Length: 273
Length: 359
Image (cartoon, rainbow over all chains, first blue to last red; front, side, top):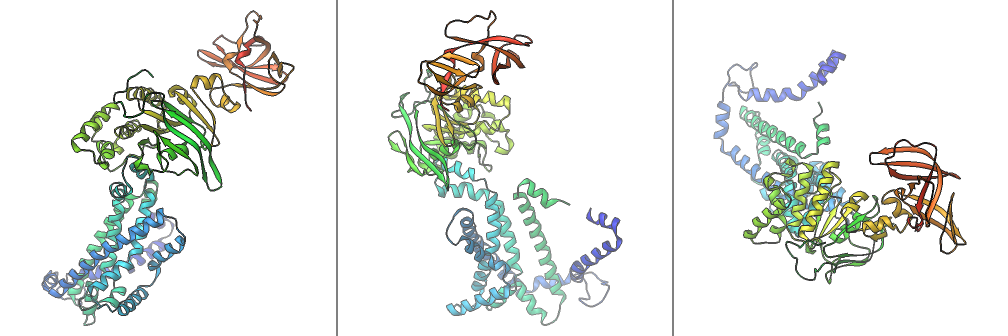
């Protein structure tokens, strides 16, 4: 609708918009197309389509090791950041304590802190603590760096919760602990899943923090980065295409869940064309 | 209160015995004093209504009894046990919330079973009690529905069943009917009253609707700005309001400001003998206590006056007149439907219907 509107007003603006979109998405299109090109990165326009780069990719065990590492780190990171983020969000939503404003700022700080700072400081901490760098440090790094994301998402979810339901639960004889498990958490389910998906995606393609904390085992982004130093291979195009597809799928699911958990007026705002 | 309770609750619940005792309870939120030294007793089996405008503190008092708020000072006792030191989940009290607060992720049946499950009631017992509660509110056909699939009135019934299934000694109802449309509201009022008689549980009902309070209650506790204005049976409150506020809030009335001097009360154009000490005074005179005097005569203990009809509002069986008695005094008079009235007429009321109230 917006496009029609601008076309009517000024064709130049429409062309400009198209160029901006091209600038953003053309490289991705090229990447996807070349992942199917028999002649690899060279040769334009692509003439012979093939799946051989994908077959080669699926046979490459070091890529799959790194994918497995990334999945391990992301899954652990999701669990850790959701757990700690939920506690922080509960404290921000319910408790009142001195220094609450400071606490909120501190919890949310990693959101605006450059990854390089977070990574460097975590590295120094690991060295100081005498911890050997490994996937464990990467997992701890992702988990802590992404707490802020979990906190903001879950805090938004808690704010939308009807507190009368928790009162009703207590009134019916449930202890605060029972109330949390039987009422609060089930009502927070959508927020938890949405936050988990977002964090998973962020962790899967995280480079800056990972770079400082990585040991011998590479995660997928670092594996790709390492191979790029030896030149761009069509295999990289293939794996990037797969990452792109999975990320888009996750983000779409996250967006859908998130707007479903928003209340009606907010949703309308969200989905206005 | 003649009905015999179907489930006689245990211990010390003979009708008339005190069930709940609110002793000198005050509540502050910051600088605002929401409740001011409230003392109130509720008898077993009673239907007591907390009536007041919004902001009068009626919901706060309910929340203190339920345990969602802590009193700033004072105590609440129930059956020889101090209630206000217990957390909400240990109080033998259940609440029907204003917006029902049903659990959206549970079916109607699971909503009702919730209280029994968290208290580890034997599974064999739960389903029977849930069915019983469902039939009590006539919702047997909706056991599997989610709250979002139910209408407001149906949600209301489930909320009621969810509270009653726990067999509380005291049921707290926070404006439970305010979200329903007028017809449904009337119907639920009569069902609620019948249900309360049938099961014999003590009801503490909060409302801002004086008609609802009059129709349902054994006693009305009228709250104004956090203080109790009057606690009495509806008929008593209506016939003998203690204060000008009570007289105006419950039903319509004429407030007559005047003074007593030498055993004569004078309020504007009206005068009658009154054996009370001299001083300024306020009387409440209900519109229906005044009637047209066809023959212009009056009996002893009656006051007669002549007044011009200024306005006539037809209300089916009755008409509400606004009459001018002279000296700038206007009275409202409710008479049986009588056709168009114009000009001056004679009116009478009996002296005993002019009730002296506190300012």
